[in-house]
Structure formats: C-alpha cells, structure tokens
Image (cartoon, rainbow over all chains, first blue to last red; front, side):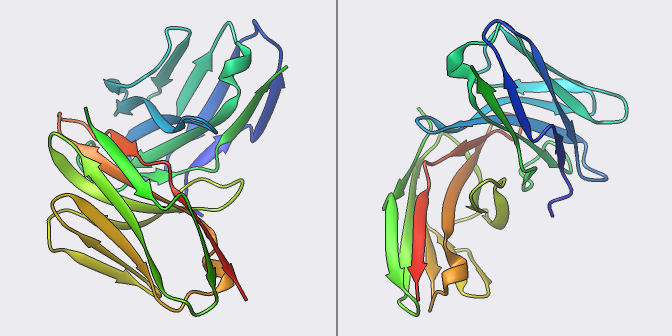
Length: 113
Length: 111
C-alpha cells in the first residue's frame, strides 16, 4: 500500500460529460502529480501541484483542470469528455518538489461510452 | 527532446533464469532515474532511485545500475511472483519533479 488514495476506482460516463477524480496524498507529502496511462501512450505526465500551487504542466488538455486544496488533497476535473479520454488516471505524491521518488495510487479507470 | 526507451518490450523467463532489462535515456538534465514495478490493475510501485553514473541499488532478486546513457535492471533467479511490467522513468531538470516514463518491459516468469 503506497498510502496514496484515489477515488473512484472506476468511472463510466458518456461523451460530453464532466467528471472529477479525487486524490489523497501520502501523509506528509506536499507535492501531487497527475498522470494519464493509455495503451498506446504509456504513462504521460499531466500536471503537478506543490503545497496548493501549480508547479508544472505537461500534456494536459485545456478541457482538463486540477487543483490542490489546503488539506493537500487534489482533484482532476475532466470536461467535454471524448472517447479518446478513456484511460487510467494516476495520482502520485512526493515529499516535496525535488527529485524525490513519487508514490502512486492505484488509479481511476475512466471509460467513455 | 527528452526520451526514454526500454527493451525488450516483453520477456519470458523460466523460474531461476537470470536476465537484464534495459532503459536508455536522452535527457537535457538528469535528476534521477527511477524504476517501478506495475502489476495489472495497480499503480506503479516504487523500486529504486539512481542519481549518478556508477551507482547501484539492490533489493532481493533485483539490482539496478546506472551509466551516463542507460540503466539496467538485473533479475537474479527470478520467481513467478516477479512477473509484472517494469517501468523506467527519468526526472528532468527545470525546478520541478516531472517524470518521463518508458513504455515498460512486460516480464513473465514461468515455473
């Protein structure tokens, strides 16, 4: 058990809808990262937050947004969903924003019908 | 462009048959090389971090090594429970901790 909690585990929705994925980092970790894993793309970095502030952006679509709250949990919001958004979404956390190991949750599997 | 390549894509071993997985990288500023294990339906599980060429880390049957251009994950006398996808990732410079992942090596160890 990595200590990173993601909910829900599975999400099934339709095109055009909006969903929110939630992540609770390991106790004491200030940085949260979001990744997308699909069969053809592998694990792709989306966005990082550190202590409530956005720190880095990767290949995140404009339809996607995230935030980190004062209690350090984070949410990833996906809107105007398309079939191609179907993937596993992972959250990871680390102690700070340096080159420390990131610890991953078990992900949310998003299926768009 | 920062890039991580893992080989082979898939590896089938007999129990006890030692082998190595390769991770080659091209990055502008390496801030650590990370090995993860991923089981089906689970998130990546952290195994090792290597920060400089010549560094080695060991854990049970696994040993990771690092050169200036690549890393190897050596598996000695593997068991069926070592079957998983092994992912290599590099941390890149820039004031944050973005990881770039390779596509992984799917390892199957048969009794």
